[in-house]
Length: 152
Image (cartoon, rainbow, N blue to C red; front, side, top):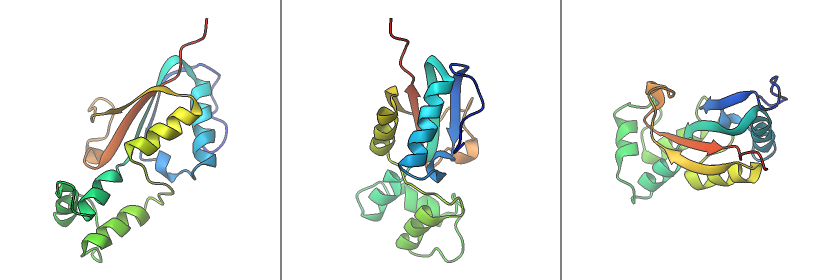
C-alpha cells in the first residue's frame, strides 16, 4: 500500500482500512496512500478507516477522561504485556506496541489528513458490525470520508 494501488481509476465504491493506516509514516506515506485511494475511488466513493483512538488514553492519563481506557487496560480488555503496571506504562505501550504504529490519531488529526488529500464529508462514526472487526471495537476511532463528486 506504500506504492501504487493496482486498480484502475474510479474502480472502487468503498475502500476499507482497519488498523493499518497508523503504520504509515506521516506525512509522506499517508498522503501518498490517501491520494491513491482518491484515484481508485469512484466519485462519491467512501474511504472508511479505523485506527487506535489516541485521544481516549491521553484524556484518561491526565485525569479528565472517564477512566474507561485505563480500566480496560487493567482488566486486560486490551492485550498488555506483564511489564505494563502503571498508567504511563499503558500509555507507552499504546504508542510503541507490537503493531509498529508510526503515527497516532484523534479525530481532528485524521480529519486534517483526509481533508488535505481532498476528501470531503469527513465524519467520525460508530462501530459497524457489517464492516468492522468486533475484536477491535473497543479503542478504535472510525472515520468515513467521501471522494468529491465529479465536477459538472
